[in-house]
Image: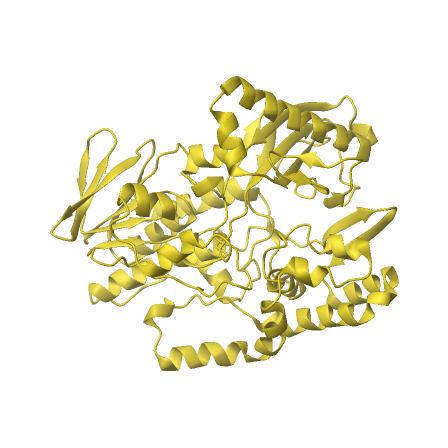
Length: 496
């Protein structure tokens, strides 16, 4: 048996590290505080309804792409998993007008010009940018800190066509970009599914990816997606210990020796990989002793590196909403206070397009809204007040849903509210955020290595290595950390 890798966390990064660790002959075991795999790539059931809590679109769903090869390596995707591609990203309703963000840039351009001809130059610029960024890809083959000049040159050459379009959108926030539109409907539509503090690039690259036939929806949803990776890992001989929170990294003279669990059990390991929340790893598990300047900047400069804090309200409804758009941004009669943040628009998403998720004639609707972590943290101190606020919010959303979908009145059978404190409780998520730092026009740090100064044999891998995070960063981070360890062990890295 090869050297022992102790992996903290059974999220996507941890499972990925486990799979690639086994493919390369290492003895691996994952230690997870929860009872199921996936971390923040998850979903949950309530009274027969499944509520998805993660995937909105999946980069790498298109066969033949580099990212798709990684998803296939870890077992998340194969030829039997159907990928659903919507005709549009979402639709926005305001003042009696409906605007669709189509994934076909030509159709999108024609549609938006009909909606707001006075914004013609901006609309053409947007759609040209979408076409220009179709060649933009995320690096997957090796860690960027291990790339040589030739590797960097090849990567830049492959992205050269996109770089011409990238420049402008990289330098402006999405909210500032949208504010230039004369049409209030288009101004608001462009900032509904991607928060406005992100670079405008975030929306353009997402639409560009969709326009190429990528970034679809894998049937079965997020929890099934994570469980397929777990199955692949277990079939390779990997081990997972659930209900096994880690309390300490065992260190002697700057070298990692293993881990200690909260029950006092110690596990010896040649390498320790934490794929848990980065802030918890760095500041709790390692007591803030092994920070470099990049990590400090990322956590201290909240203006350049903000995080997206949300509340998710989920409803189980005894009727079929298939004939409605799958995602609608609607304008309720009054804003919704989702906990310290007023939401003028509310996004309603149903999952009737995926028939594998629930029985015929049933619908799950989820609503994700901006919220304030400190507000919810204060409410959590009083369990009664916390429960009352969750119920208040759920009832406000129920009223909006019943107004938008009249046939749902009296048929909402269950509701569920996940707050920032929910993500903190189950995932140790920093400030309850399920995504890493946003890429803003002020942000300069694009990537941080998982190697920590002064600590040998320990690596961090996860979505927090590369803003804006998400599942692609997590799965690639798991791959990259095994590539680093293979390099230290003078082993040729195997990926299949």
